[in-house]
Image (cartoon, rainbow, N blue to C red; front, side, top):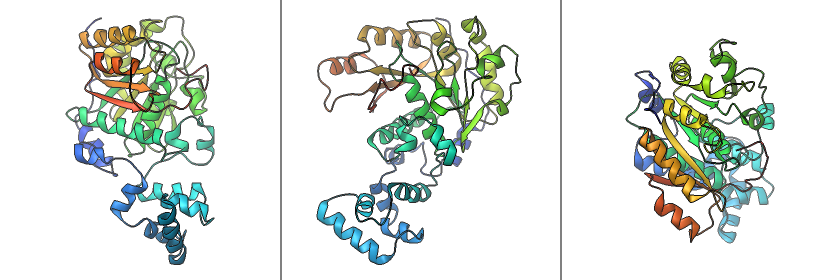
Length: 354
């Protein structure tokens, strides 16, 4: 592999990211470790009941009844409120979202997004928490950089990289960080399916100079998040992706976008992923339980590292409660600065997703 060609990102991007991340300072390791939007976090910032009273969702008498049930059954405040019939699950999440200035797609936008994306549809689930922990770890490791581009890679199809890329992009946007999810899988794209958006134009038409390189061509699917779909499959994907084409395109958007998350094709089926990651500068690897071969992951990790691209870590898709056997071997042999456990309840949710 050749040396990476990184985009020439803007000078003030790191300051921009830090200023826009209103929930917590993403570059403070202590705060990042607490970047989990749970009821426990809300309780540290103020009483849960007070937040719902302030939002005119509950009165003091109802709050007292919820707290009583919460103590008796050892359940969460929101769960107790739903059991008592005071609130719906959607109302609980709405108040928590506002408590944290938490960006979420709403209305028709939300209904078009794949239900498999927990970060959107069940934002306080274990899977969503894992994505936020992953985001925090990434932000700590890129703190010295300006704008950054992160390529999400895996050896094979159906290992979850498209799902991880989409979830991660949403999580950055939820901090009011201007983020672009780029579907650079020009052979079997899936992000337009995940977000329920058109794919007539996109990355391929921009790189082939058949459409203007403007942010208007990307789809703003929620506040602070744009999705640049793959566009029509070209006859020569690797040629139009070759350096410096993709790097120049990212650089063109870098005055408006702080974080680029790039979805890629399986690296064992074509060389596109290697071409893409050289122009990104950072890589995140995805493996799937009882599916990904250890040899493939080791080779991918080695090839990317030898090319001068920094591998930020490995996401292991659907790990069991305790890492034994196969998992432990993977953890031992893949050299990565951090390991993020990502819980994916259904890796076979659709054939088109990778």
